[in-house]
Image 1 (cartoon, helix red, strand yellow):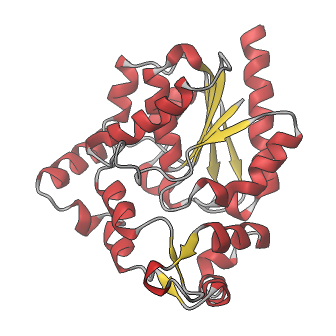
Image 2 (tube, helix red, strand yellow):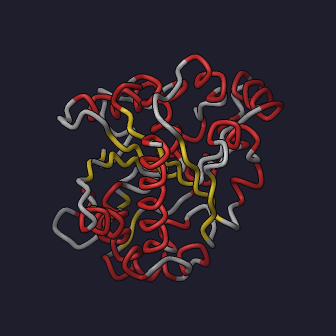
Length: 271
């Protein structure tokens, strides 16, 4: 069974095409639809609440050993949860979530202490994000016109438009839509990113092998670097053509790469 964790602001249903392919290959898929939106599991320091949301899902699954797969924020959450439930882990496949390390970790600590994360992280952009439209057609036109979304596979964009928005409660009788993943929550997640994950994993080993898949044009990988990630994953590192959002740009390649790593990790464990 695959337990999938989504990236910040992109709910699990946006990855429907990936889930369908994994299910067609014989794997069940479980996922939290939206991290950070349940009052029982709030966004907090070091993402402890969201990690509990993921471990709660894991605890409710009968499968004794699970594949944890996570994209961006979801990659961090998969590693955090694996450290809490190491005996449940068959393997972890991280999609473009490079581990912050070294002086960059120290810098983020200082910025957080000064209360400046909302100004220097992507949080500011999240708070400026448009989040309401007159109907689904306007939603689609809005995102399709943006260069970042123009790279997406059409089916992935359609799923984001449909499942990433909901009826606007301010227009209950009409067709207006708003983002389901609230921009304030998105901003809070960016502002509280765990910057000491490398140290956490030293005291909370994930319990299974880790593989990392990066986008060839990932700005996030370029900014953070891969030194700590390579140390964690060893030689289990591969690339897919695309940006940080390559799962939306290249869904078929992403699902195939995850399945290949699952096979390789199982073979290594049996050797």
